[in-house]
Length: 249
Image (cartoon, rainbow, N blue to C red; front, top):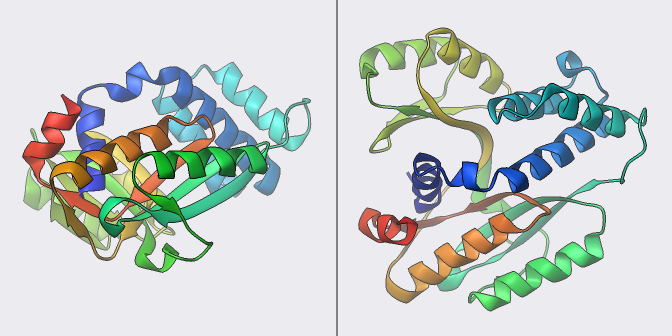
């Protein structure tokens, strides 16, 4: 598992997502609104909206909030006009970084993102500069506790998963974007403990970081994730577990 994925696993375990619930709800509402605007308000015919609504329900967002976000996206209710934005750049040590955002003001957001990159030893690059280093895949993390590895492998491979790996305290399940929903649904039907699940940009190669560059990279990740317009951040760094745990404590 890349350092990026391990970092998110640690933050999930420590409840960091709960501490940032206001930011999480804002991000989910934006994603639902954009998904509904681009693909319509019916989740059965709109995979992006379906995934966003599922994430919102998992975060215990009230149903009325979800409904209003959909209606703002379809134009049934007034609201800000959000659009997708993707930013690419480099972090300390030449780490490749992809930032997915949803914004109502691209000029403001790109200025903010450029400042964050610069503050922590990185630089914002041109569109396409690092995207080729990533592949979009479904990534589902399953807690090892109480999970039989052989049984899990049988379930996920029969459901259409591409790969299953040992990620330390979790099993990592990789799927194609097309099979992600079916694999996740099958896993949940077996009452398996899903630590996290998302469509991610998976790095095809990783760079090892240690010492000051590693700590700068982690601060850069955290600052990017905490920006109100940022939905997801992907990077191809790897950092030793002890250094990650120290930073997360």
